[in-house]
Image 1 (cartoon, rainbow, N blue to C red):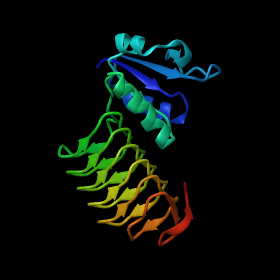
Image 2: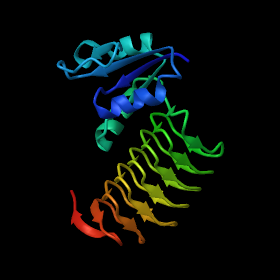
Image 3: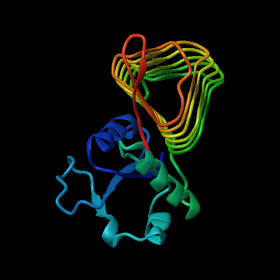
Image 4: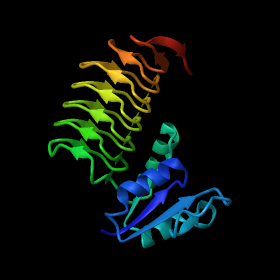
Length: 208
């Protein structure tokens, strides 16, 4: 229990609230959107008026709830540099092996499964019903969308997004900054900076 600050008030912020509300005495939101709508009775702070020193003095942990992988990781690293403690948020209905390793700033949503000896880096998101099987290794900033499945012993690079319902076969290596399209089936290794889609997945686009 303690005081949690959620950076982000959009959809991801609401998902994090759902995961975290039973685990903290006090939850507050932080945003840069001065027109943001109220979220029930939770207090909202604005970045423009809130210093890092204030955050350190008034909250025990912070979690960045931003959907964009690069933005989420960048903000997470800012808070690490400032010495602010990151939360690791796991929904009570998630199944996380006691042998898994999950770094700070990561969120595991309802009905997600994290297998034994999986290692998830900073600022990861495993959404509702996502499955990360045994011995997978995720770098920082990875996102697994609802009902996506990553089979055993896969490696996923920094800032890569596995979209809704995608399936990745075992022993696959996926590069950095790539996107695996919704419903795709990945049967081969994937390089950095590509959009993959289809069954089986093929390269649809090279991205900067």
